[in-house]
Length: 156
Image 1: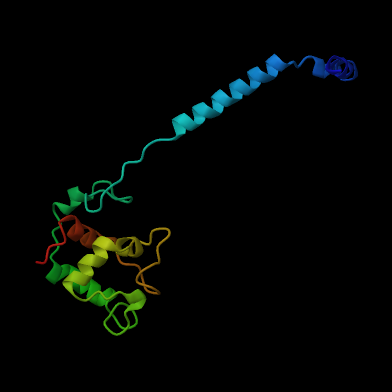
Image 2: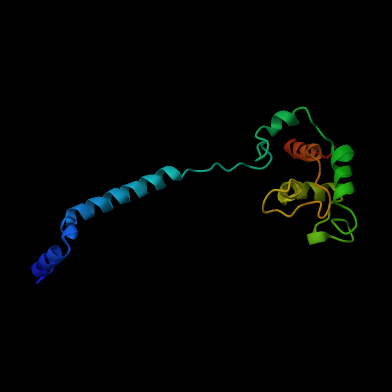
């Protein structure tokens, strides 16, 4: 029965007669190898970058800059957070926006090291812009915060 069906199809559709099982298998094999090659070469292992090693998305050599910038907590970082973050309606003791307060050394250090503070103040995609509704912090101010973190976030 199969012989007659195949013969009938070849007679009725002569172009299909040119395609036999071997050529179909070869085409599938070539397609499979091509897709496999694409997947094999496209997949690479991304290296995780631990926080505070001086490499970030916008500045690949932050630690070179941070060698010359050594901001202190007392004179640089705390005033930045006091003027831009720990203000009424935001991250002060009364408002506690998102449950976060940025007043003490520990609160600010934890915010910079463990929370998406840098992401927010740098206005990176997927992060809420900070200061909210205000003017973004200047790059030089953000650089001071990054360098403070890079230098180990010392309490000086």
